[in-house]
Image (spheres, rainbow, N blue to C red):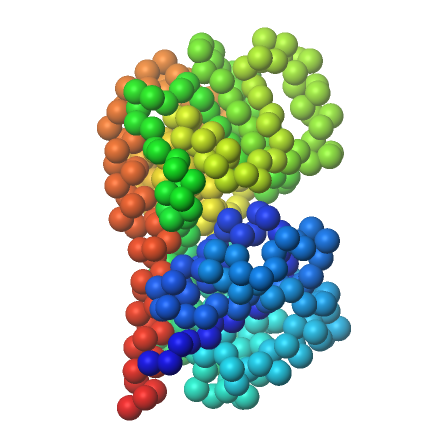
Length: 384
């Protein structure tokens, strides 16, 4: 079989993206298929370091105004790249099942009918196909997709049941987000067991954003007797959240040395060492689509306290490795935190179980096998 070309067209790139599924699926899929991977993205000042080859992937910056909310004008350069190179692309990889990517898929298949389109949906909920002209158009565009992966079993089951029409139910696969275990090994990050962990509670994300609902965690912590535990919040702080943080410490001076804001941490080894040191991970989001932080918390054995967002059921193994907290219930979160602070001995059992689940399921080298096998099968069938 000739060397395959996998091309990913993405609307944005920075140092954070290369540590997430938007990049890692391309990287691991290319390695699994021994393929040539081209990662095409809009050139910008903040990503100029990503040129040439990065982790085995050909980084191709182009002049483009591409963005998530696509318009004909914003996509013209990316669209032109696709038209010029479609016949050279064996697998077109796209991220999100939005109108931009549906149109890209359709155009690509018109130019290269034997090419393969793979879309990683990253969907919070499944869009119903609908009736009328819009439903007909969507159904027609869906037929350009050869492989669609979704991150949660609930979304997979809904699509399999036909809520997006009869076509997609035959091409959908379940593939949650995973941990970059290859990089962890390259960085020599050795995972800590219970006896070597510290009394740390952490959260990671865009602190103060409406989605992340950081206030819920801080309110819960204020109600706790932390004893010898500390709370570490990792990530950029939204500007309009800063007054709340200032007032929080003014109202709770005892927490000044107990609650720490690190700011954003882009160095992966430094970030992972926080997960590695911590015993408990909190996610208080109002919505998610299989958050990347889930797989990282699991990989380092954190006990996960989370709102019941998409992916929570899978990552906690139905609450065997964590606990669901009702949306906006700082009281319930406080109670669960206090139980763990007072006696965290249960973590002696959950930490090794978390390592096992991460290694066997939520690990990129294991996860992409599903997609690579599907690509091989499609190629084999088309060669008959």
